[in-house]
Length: 252
Image (cartoon, rainbow, N blue to C red; front, side):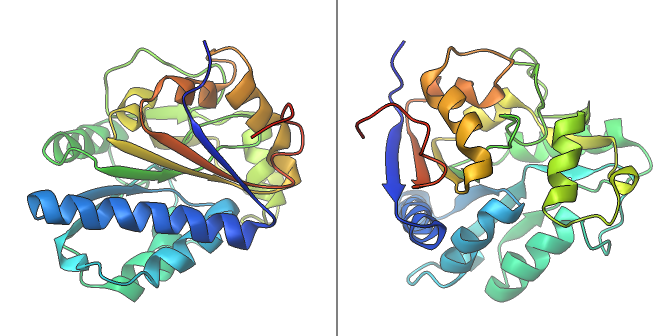
């Protein structure tokens, strides 16, 4: 099945991130105009730096009408740990645009992670997502759904085991000093919950993502490449730089 994904290729990651942020900002403004509130999902990691920087600088968004969820968090990591995704989003998004209508962080250090998944599931069910700003991992993961990903679960959030390639990526991006410091479990939004978003804005720069991008866009839809499921979303735009797009078959 051919991918209906809108694919945009830019010279560098700054241009790709800017274009992705513009697309997300437009979706946020549109949701606020039509229903008085925008519900969004944000991702983290090195691939989102430029996009978030531009999103924060966007004009014409009443952030008091925006509800933010995010994709995932390591189990056992406090919100002040340098690699915490809550810390990342607080510094790069929440603090600069404060106040938001609501921020629903994934509490990776909650005493009961199953109960935390349940709490988040109820919140996201009450706030259907207008736009999700996400990335793709080096191993093709979406959020922390490493291959083979669970395409079937209806749970909104679940606890997952992180595979070796995923943990090596976190080390390689500089979030942890040693491989053994990278947690092996996380709370992650599920594939089906991500796909429930009305619009997906996917930002994937860098050569190290080129193989995952090719598999996701041009390979079969399979749990072995979790991001391949994006081919089935009716409103998905992917923003690449020349490096991450370098293995794609010719043509835009």
